[in-house]
Image 1: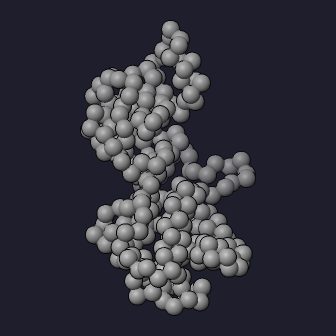
Image 2: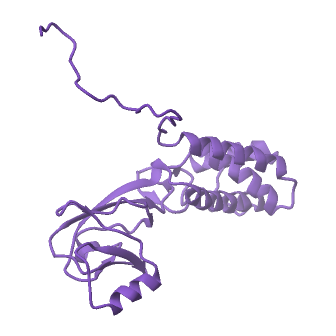
Length: 239
């Protein structure tokens, strides 16, 4: 589903004429549709750690507290300028095989900076768009983490984007959800009744979140969820 087809489907649900174009179209209904579609993409991306916009990052550490902006981590060894937020408990020093703990609060950061003792394990915080570690790591180590990208759509050529830019752009997130979100947001912006559409949208988002990325089975018994002990392969064997 492209931006154009998304807008046309939303128009059908709203009961307004289908647009032939979206980007550059100065008709009021279309401008409101585009604004609603952009707002929906941004807000939906913030709702959940969607697997579609989850990415892995690796960079080479520098011997300084500041590892740099996400657009130039490790002194420019990596570019993650689409960074929106880090996924908790995924930040590791692969060279040392230990976890990098965090995020530190501003109070914790200042307390550590004011102390005379620094532990062997690094801890992290983000300040002014830069990634900081305390104590400063050794240069040349491989650090890795997972993060959520701020880009929720992409061009027809595959370039990730944080906003719709052309009629041929496609969504990275569930486009049906984005269409439903565009409908209720459009109606709300035009002071039209939107409560029913909003309830349908919220129910659909909740269901999508519950299925996203696969889920483990929740076991209420004390029996382990994985097989343990000696595993004997199928085939002919003798004791």
